[in-house]
Every structure is written in C-alpha cells, then in structure tokens.
Amino acid sequence: MTAAEHVVQDYATMSLSLKGHPVGFVRDNLRALGVRTAAEHRTLANGQFIKVAGLVLVRQRPGTASGVCFITLEDETGTFNLVVWASLFEAYRKQILGARLLMVEGHLQIEGEVIHVVVQRCHNLNSLLGLLTAANEENPPVGDMTPYPGGRNFR
Image 1 (cartoon, rainbow, N blue to C red):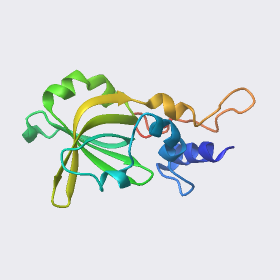
Image 2 (cartoon, one colour):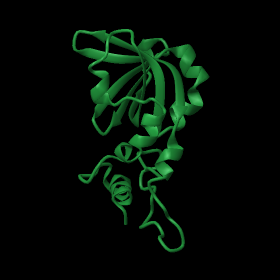
Image 3 (tube, helix red, strand yellow):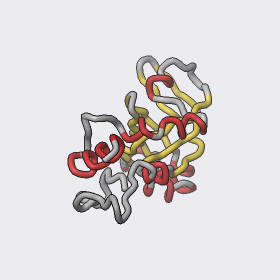
C-alpha cells in the first residue's frame, strides 16, 4: 500500500494515524484552489477573506444558538473553528452534512486568542479523498471500510 492508503486504513479503523494526515496528501490540490492551512490562518488579519479546508471533526447546532452551526475542521497543521449562520446553513445543508472534507470561504473573525472563520460559501471536497485510495481488482480494500457509519471513513 502507498503511504496515503496506509493513512486511510488507519483512519477507517482507528480514526487517527501516526503516519500522516489525509489532508496532507491532497495539499497540492488544495493550494491550487487557494486554500490556506490552519497554521497560516493564525498569521492573517481580522476580517481578511480566506479559503480553508479540512476533515470535519464536529458539527454543532445548539438549541440556544438560533440555528447557527459551529463546525470544527482539521488539516495536517491544526484545527479551524467555523461559524455558519442559520440562513447559510439552509442554503448549504447538503454540503455541510455530507462532507467529510469540507472547503469553506469566508472572513476571519479574531477576538483575542479566539479565531473563527465566518462562512460565506461551502464546498464538499470528498472526491479529493477518493484520490488517496486506488482500490481495484489488483488492489482490493482491506476489510470493511465503513466501520462507523456516518463517521470519519475516508472512502
């Protein structure tokens, strides 16, 4: 197996890998789209427009938040906190709920040590994760690739 395939197998079975991060293997594709890393977004100014992408770790819509959705993404350098207003959530519901690899465009909101991306557009980039595996007749997947339905299964 390739290094990327090892990482995918690790994530499918243990939800983590010591060999790498799936987003790191598609970083060149993301750079071509103008996507910045979690490490880079910490150096930018409040209000600056940014594109970020990562694996969806958490989606929360607290009942007390008036429909606002809070999402945490992770890339190979760290995490992002996203704020999705209720009207935008409804417009991008399919992308937000269906994406394992989510790219968003929005503006940075920096208050002290807390940094959020206030989302304006969402894109499901699950197809990039498919590039990490080359399952075919000569290279079948090992075991069941969906041990946790709806979880972080990168297939």
